[in-house]
Each structure stands twice: as C-alpha cells, then as structure tokens.
Picture 1 (tube, rainbow, N blue to C red):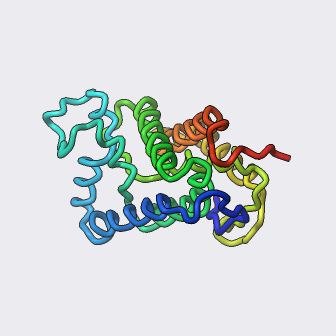
Picture 2 (cartoon, rainbow, N blue to C red):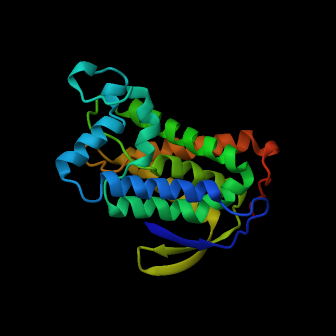
Picture 3 (cartoon, rainbow, N blue to C red):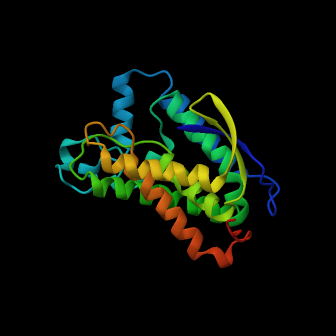
Length: 231
C-alpha cells in the first residue's frame, strides 16, 4: 500500500531513540546471520524452530515430532526478530524507524521495549488463535511494529507523514489517515482472504495494532508525552 519516508514530529523528552535503533540493528544482524544467504531448507528449519507454529504452540500436534530447539512459548519472542526476505525486513524496519522514535519518546526507553514486545506477543497469540491448525511458521516484526503504528496514531493523529504511495507517489498525509487506512486495509483483507491466499500474517497485524491502541489508551496518563486530540 505505502512505505513511510519521514514525519514532522520532533522528540520532546528523550535525546535519541536508542531502543528503536537497537531493535533495528538486532533485526538486521539476525537476518544477515540466519536469512540473507542460507538455503531455503535452512531458512525453513530456522523459521520452524524459532518462529511461531500455531499447531505446536497450542499442542495440536505432538511436540515430539517437531523441531523444537527452544520451549515453544519462547517463540512468541524469538519470532519477532526473524524475517523471510530482504523486502520483509526493509519494510518492517522502515515503519519502525519512522514511527517508533516518537512512541519511545512517550513511553521512555525501558517502557517502550516492554510495550514493543507485548504487542508482538499479543500479535502472535491472535494469529495462533485464528489459525490454530496451521503448521506454517510465523516470523517477522510486523506484529510488534503494528502496535507501534497504533500508538503513534493515537498520540500524534495530526502529524504529517510523508509516504510513498503505491511505491511511486510521494505524499504528505495526516498520521490518522495513513495509519487508520492501513489498519482498515488489514481488517478488510483478513475477513475477505482465504487461509490459503492469506500470505501475510493479517491477524498478527490486527492483534499487534489493537494491543498498541489499548496499552497506549490505558497508560495515557502515565506517558511522558500525552496524546494530542485529533482535528
């Protein structure tokens, strides 16, 4: 749909988005170590072992027949740091870089890290709930990033965000329209796509986004930066 380029929202509390930067570095390094140059067989083994496999997570299949290098519940964390290709990685990191700095500004460094991981965990759990029989591994930061988008939309609805629409048209647009439209597309796609054609983790996106909205709303009085009313 679009790729974010930059926004016009300055940091107000923190000096630099250290946690956001660290998350991007970790994701890139792990991709270079596990996904950039290995064979498809190796990539599948890594994704199956460290990604979320719904049928294994909720014991629909016998765990003894699956590759489990770590306890299955830990995949709710590890899946967030693995990616299946360059575009998968670049898209997630672009959204994270543009929007996460201001969310980190609002939550503080430690609070933002906890918020980010919780959004990713909730995203993986909703994906599992909606596709409990699936044996395909879920990997990627998009669930956690979706929570960041929701928080940004709630905190800075009037912020101007430059996006590259359809990968061709640069356009400045209020955050509430860009991110609200993105979420609406996820909802429509989730309810109109079949399981076989649903190639992206739409329910993970929805779960992360809803979690980000709820956490930001519930914690709004404790944030370092308070939500700004929409126009």
